[in-house]
Image (cartoon, rainbow, N blue to C red):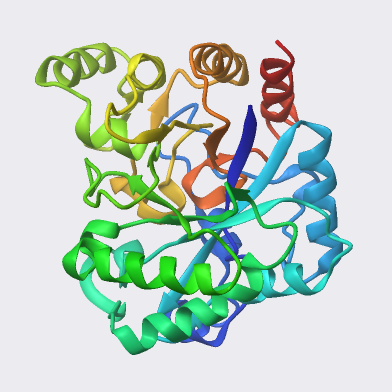
Length: 353
């Protein structure tokens, strides 16, 4: 069992974020601004020792890798942002590639969705569109090839492991790009690309027979596709005595136990290899404010219990955790002031058992 943790690179300044969100913006900006919406609400989230790091510092990357190794994390899956040749937040991954002393397996998830002002509630205002062309696909592959060629890059059957976040949003469900990149990979000494479709809140099912596997991205997949009317009703009923009045607002939260039980019980796809995903917590108050999705009944002990159950009923090589460092979404393995290293300890205990 190899645990791969999703890795967000938005912990350094870039000109585009300075323009869109204000000078000096990083993921820490929203994380620090989060407000407690009700009594007992775990906000703001504060990293242990107030370690608001800058990912352009290789000492930070070394600290993350040493910590991940110590607790049994196998590798990182870097989010990769490519918009018809334009890149965003690429520096941490490029620095990692150049520094061979950073010895840790990794792979890439192409987050191929347009950027909008969703953090401001303006989801229809696109600030970085996502477009596709055959010419750009050639250029994009050549860029990725230097990562694929690195001996730290995770491969399956001599195929670099590549996740695509929204394959269904691409022209022809991405089949033209898949064929092209498989051909180019074979010309460069591989047996193709190991394409993984990410099943999430937008994409429920695989859309291309030529991909190698699918991944359940959690908790997004379960929240959007696996909650029945009765599940939602029972969740609301459970929340009634727990709902906290803030002014005239009621904040309804999702039940952690219910979501995790559905993740554990879900069967793999019959027609395609399926990787399961799991999550630490979820509370994106830092991004969404009063429109946030918040879970209740969360604790390191419960995570450890469910994580152990999941891997005991799962026989694939890889399992994906959301996430290593999604601080503004409240799902991270890195230590914070409240729980210290307890989530990492639960991963290590689960893997040992």
